[in-house]
Image (cartoon, rainbow, N blue to C red; front, side, top):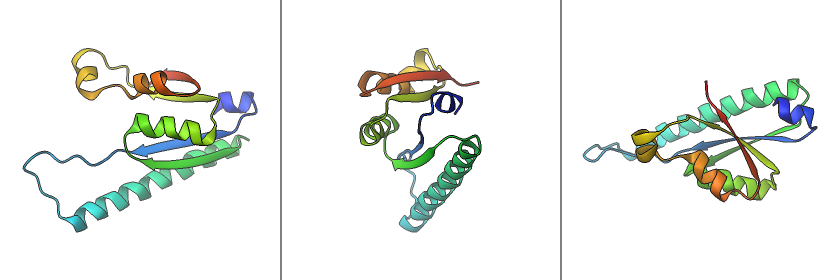
Length: 123
């Protein structure tokens, strides 16, 4: 937010809902699955609205995007569709086996984004 304000840039806040993955042998009926997905969308929209409100209060022109799918793919698609100049992306800083098994969204975005990417390590 500070970077956008200092450079008089438009800020797009993006959240990507990951696909639901069930462990083999588990079953969730269609109604329950739909209810869970709808609730996740609702909570995501609320959080996006809150973040956008804070940014606007700080004087930053802001828009929000909610996408569904694999995070790295959706972030890169959003970069292209919004013609972004810069992506600021949080990272967990995982190493070793956790990174091997969980992958790295940040690595994939850095490698495939059509614009500059700034990664910020989480607290």
